[in-house]
Image (cartoon, rainbow over all chains, first blue to last red):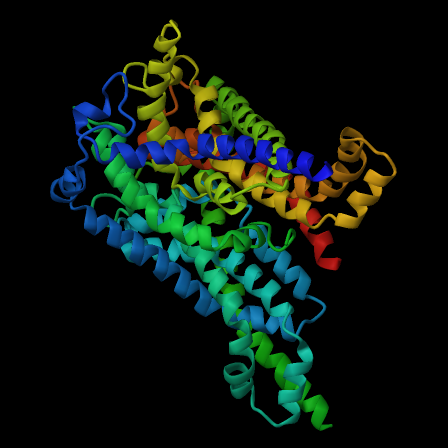
Amino acid sequence: MARNVSTQRKLVTTVVAWAIGILIFFPILWTFLTSFKTEAQAIASPPAFLFFDWTTENYFEVQSRSNYFKHFMNSVVVSFGSTLLGLLIAIPSAWAMAFAPTKRTKDVLMWMLSTKMMPPVGVLVPMYLIFRNTGLLDTRTGLVMVLTLINLPIIIWMLYTYFKEIPGEILEAARMDGASLAKEIIYVLTPMAIPGIASTLLLNIILAWNEAFWTLNLSAAKAAPLTAFIASYSSPEGLFYAKLSAASTMAIAPILILGWFSQKQLVRGLTFGAVK
Amino acid sequence: MGDAMATLHTRSAARLMIAPSVLLLLAWMIVPLALTIYFSLLRYNLLMPGMEEFAGLTNYTYFLTDPAFFQAVFNTLAIVLGVLFITVVGGIGLALLLDQPMFGQGIVRILVIAPFLIMPTVAALVWKNMFMNPVNGLFAWLAKLVGLQPFDFLANAPLFSIILIVAWQWLPFATLILLTALQSLDEEQKEAAQMDGAGAWSRFIYLVLPHLSRAITVVILIQTIFLLSVFAEILVTTNGGPGTQSTNLTFLVYAQALLQFDVGGASAGGIIAVILANIVAFFLMRMIGKTLEA
């Protein structure tokens, strides 16, 4: 009897939760479906949900009209470049703070985090002028630099919380064995730290891929990543829903897949370890 | 002796390893901000090069007496509070729901998380065109279906529409964090409460909500930091309009700088935005600082 009730309850919960889940996901699903319609079908009333002539034409149109691949590669270079550069700078720092903490370590960490609290608009004007005067405006190098700086605090924090979980005794033991600092890092720490580094990498690629303040303000036709390229659809001429959908689907698909694999790390990284 | 040497060695090595990040962030923090403060004291327009002159606090008085400024502050707060309300209340509800036993829990979770992974420009343009457009949008079709006039969301309720779009993007964040916190609630505690005859409501009020309070605070503070700087969603949907009806502080400074080329005025606005954000950041830092000690 009791079991019956709980099965029934489980069924009801399932139906309600799936309905809400699909509702929340619907705009994405709708974008995906629209990307396979013709422009006329995309604005048809009543709208066609599944029964329309599926076409992949929009994907080719988007590429041939506006060189989509170039912007896609800009996104790849900028997000991977800034994340890898950030890791390169952050790994030694996080390692030192996790394993050789001093009285000031906590203050340094908090201060680093506080740089993240500065609203970007507070430094928009000087950044724009510096970029303009040094020729960094609308270059991938410039975007990589800015995104590295804005994500560096998060990278350090995430790595720090992961490194802190590595038992210090193991390092002590290695030290006893006479391993040098370099060997300690390569043979003892790295294998244990790889999962943490991988999670950090993943989260930061997602953040950099979707960053839409600096990429919009500091790039134009040449270096525009997908965030800025898609923004050009805001003032369209003629029919464009299907093409917007195709461009959007390609822009969000890789990150959706990455993000679904790293749900746990999302929580940890975005709350600076405050919620695990 | 050898031990002391080793420690000294490690300590200077550690300092060397921390130095690059500290120096970079220090430069990133000081140089542009100092320039913003400097520019904010100048009469400086990019359209009139070579005409820069010291202007004292004129830019600040200009900004602080501009009606658009008060509208922008109001809009900024409306976006922050509106989105917080929707995402915290919705997030608690969704987290409680997703915590129940059900079939295909993992898939539902994936569906709910998805909007957070969508880049802001895509999210805003999809909502603007395919849902809120008064002629071709799905909402217009739904309205006609039940015999109503289609509503032009972005023209007639621009701020509300933007709040809706941004809330859609942030609801997954709140849900995910509250769900994580909920799952750490001891199963035994819940069962004990049930044994004591506590109803679902009193269990929620006296057990679940206090347990979630820390996670809710984290959600509110972190979201506030990001929501104070909403930009792309406004740029691609309403461009701040009609008039300045959907202009927030970030967008106002952007417009002043890159559309009016008023470097001085925009810098003053930027500094005001920094001060406002710092008030919020102060509380956030204290909160995270406490968790470090724990």
